[in-house]
Image (cartoon, rainbow, N blue to C red):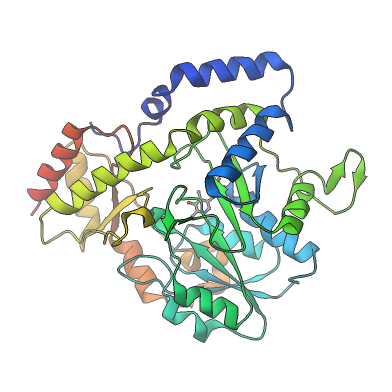
Length: 367
Ligand SMILES: *Cc1c(COP(=O)(O)O)cnc(C)c1O
């Protein structure tokens, strides 16, 4: 069987180095806010080229903390609106609503799956304070039009960079395009920990200081609490593992790009709609390789019968979730169509040439 994602194989590719660092951290007797975190934050900031990287407990917290910090610093307040793509993982929306800000959903572009920038302006009101920009499936959602729009209306751009570490737009990395970005190191992401982990990257030093404090009980100094914070720290064990794996993320993204371009070139089946590769290959790191098919469930069953495991990202959009029952009457036809048609094929640094050959051959025989 071709697994959708073989995490064991992905991590065993760095077995010796990871085990050495795990043992070192274990034996050090220091497990939070220590040297491993400091090192990883410095290396991550250097990689993204931001002046700050702050390790936190997970990707959702990274995004939540950005908004919480803006509120704490007085730049946003309860009831302010944030533009969020309707087509995203629910975490992007939760980060906004959890802070008592109002998510305003905007339809995606059917070709990129990212937010349709031409539809943002109509959603802006006097209370709009920010755009949550999601680089979905690993494809950068940035554009000159978006930047101009944000400047015209004085909006912050918060990047949900959970899926696009290593992608860049004209030489600037995702995570360094907007005002602040949240990264996720969930095990299945392009840079994955051995559990939950996340980070914020930003060039805004004041925002960074607030986030750092908020993530540690609102404290910069033990037992001195300047904000009503929370506990969202990236532990030493995860930081050590991530510091090892960060060195290989470009190499691993390059393998993903090779697999994606083979799928795009060699899958030839009119029943399958392939994703569009950006003209500049640097803009995509192929966290997911997502195709569309009218009878998606039948395609998934066929692939499964032929030994190919696939997943759906995502089966139900946020506005159709029970959690947001107040949105159940809203209609986002493009988002809904995408959710009915998408299927994610195996793609990762450990999917072999033979496996790619096999996926292509099986899909090309599908009728
Ligand atoms: C994974 C993910 C998150 C949340 O990250 P966690 O580390 O799982 O909390 C947020 N947004 C998107 C788009 C994601 O894919």
